[in-house]
Length: 191
Ligand code: 3PG
Image 1 (tube, rainbow, N blue to C red):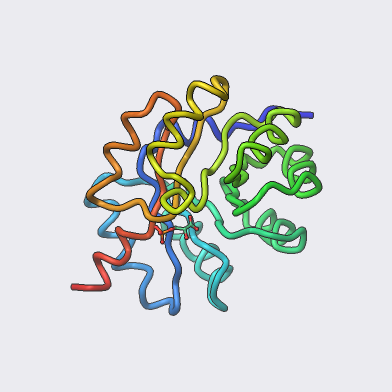
Image 2 (spheres, rainbow, N blue to C red):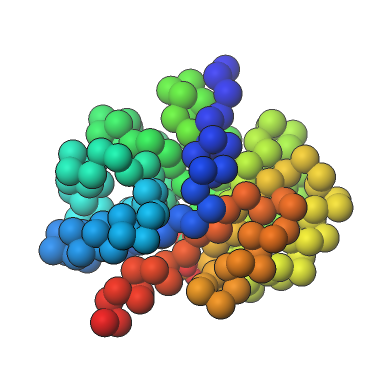
């Protein structure tokens, strides 16, 4: 089995905009905003009908970006994403069958965990880079700090309730490599 390359993606990208497109018209304005703010990564969640079309479009037009898919929960989604050469995949939970497919195909992946038992299961399966989701209602900064002592080899990317006010605090933790959140897109939409 090949090594998961997610570490390299996360260490170069401390802020990951997690976005949901309802229409193709929303894409260019968001991409220009991100580029202007020197953010070169995007996680497009598979939560709307246009998600795959949006990812294909971004892949073609914004080839300097690292383009991931989020909210991935089944094999068919992974197969479709492989066809459009997705750069990385984020899952809300930890599914070993999906992880095996991703490993075999050398696709960088970030599985989600929330509880200590899920973290232990991830460690047993040699996954050390994990999405901590939903971060804020699962103990937020404080629990991640404790996890740093308990699970010293595990590195997290918290998402869920991260925002402009609290993201820097999370990034200061030694076991947090990057953070993800929808606040950047919400900021643009509110203008
Ligand atoms: C995710 O999928 O990571 C979250 O939905 C992002 O959470 P947020 O909307 O609270 O930032």
